[in-house]
Amino acid sequence: MIVENKKRIRREYQPLTTAASLKILTPASPVSQVFNPIQNEYNPDRGITPLVILPQVFADASDGSWTTHNANRLLSNMKWYVNNVDITTLPAWAGLFSIDTFEDNRGSITISRNIAVEDKIELHFEAVIPDMRTGVNVPIKTDTILLSTLDRVDDTYQLSIGDDAVIRYNPFYDKLLMYDYKLANGISAGTREESIDGNAYERTVNLLVTKGAKATTTGYTVELYKLIGQNKTLLTVSDLDIISISNTKIVFDLRTVEKADYLVLVKEGAKEVARQQCSVVRVYPPFTIEPLSSVSINPGETLHRNIASVHQNGEIVRIPEPIIRMLWFTDTANITGKEWQEGSRTVVELNRTGIGETYLDDWMDIYVAAEQKGAFYGLTDGADDYTDSIGNDYINY
Amino acid sequence: MKYIITTLSKATDIGINPIGHLKKGENIILNEKELMSNALLVGDLTERVKKLGAKSYTDLYIKRLIKTEGYGI
Image (cartoon, rainbow over all chains, first blue to last red; front, side, top):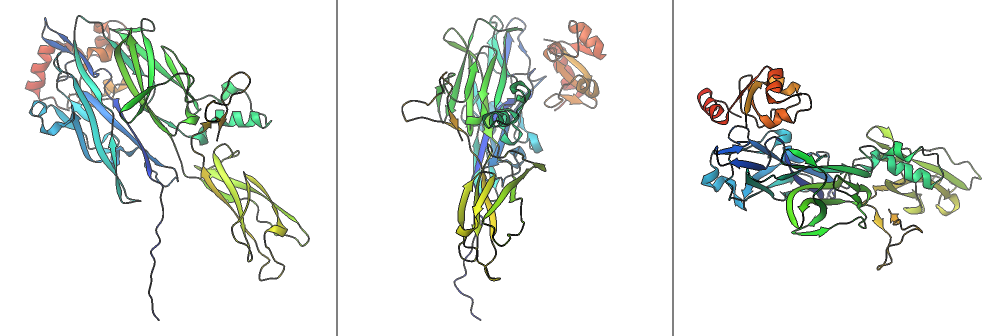
């Protein structure tokens, strides 16, 4: 027996989607310090209560093949940079920082160094995630964060965001998405208010602005930017991913975001006085799908009906349409890969399947090809967005 | 700013994450801001420190204490 022309066939994986944001783990030792020149003291003094910054890294793959979504524990080649210089090479920082290598806080930096009033320190983090599925090291790079110190004379602004730095949107848990679908299809849907929780696509991010020690809601404006590479684009409520922006909160529409990084700026007049960053990523959890019915075909039957049974995280997904694209196929001895309808239900015309009438060809395999739908998009003719009679954008999926 | 030495268990009881704090044995150093912004404590700093059964120190004094007693992350 001769074996030759062996062919290797590999599994094909979707590339990793990653998001990385810097999160302050010590809110009482923030990135801004105040220097009191009379007492020669920093408040707070990082030599006493250090600053800890975590590069929060999230990874996912659209085919559901990646399960370690909080990816910090996988990081390697971790480096922190001060004004774009590797911190380990800077004598001024020697002994005044440490980098955590432990599990979910892997990569976080603890800083004991105070920053002089005249110094402006920009920090960022770089690392790689080894993707064993594809054999590729996926690079991670965060945006920069500014460490600064102000003279005590100034009352300074600070901005805190009342949410995780990385907001994960999992449409499988979105009751509001289901509400919309049920309402559009004449199914009893309850109330919209009942459907809005922490998993809904309509996500409110609260902004807490303080001036000095006091929280404030006036005397400043809030601007929201989308970061694309080194550029930033000012967003308004006419952008699909933004429902509203005010001095106290931003409401996102997470349905329309695959992955995006946002920058929130607080301005007093034209001058930036505080900033924070956050990211949004769409989650692609694994799910299973199979035809529910496997009843035999009786002689004389002309139609076969079936329904897709979808499971995710051990639960039945009762209405998969807004989340999953499903396409029905049949194979018979005579025709393979015959394509039928899209959706969770199918009606197959048996005389078009190629099913035969002898014991050799009287069988039919029925199956569903499925993938999770990506971010929704606005309908446009290229120049104008389509809207309804009162100006609501049409969003498609 | 004042700094406070309390125990790890009392700090975690009021919701403080010990990560990044200087510690020695059961003791942990917090700063004034952590106590003043804590929703589980009320009153001025003296009252909050008292509620914790802790002591507050000046910047200079606590720096000396960190050195002599060997506090670390």
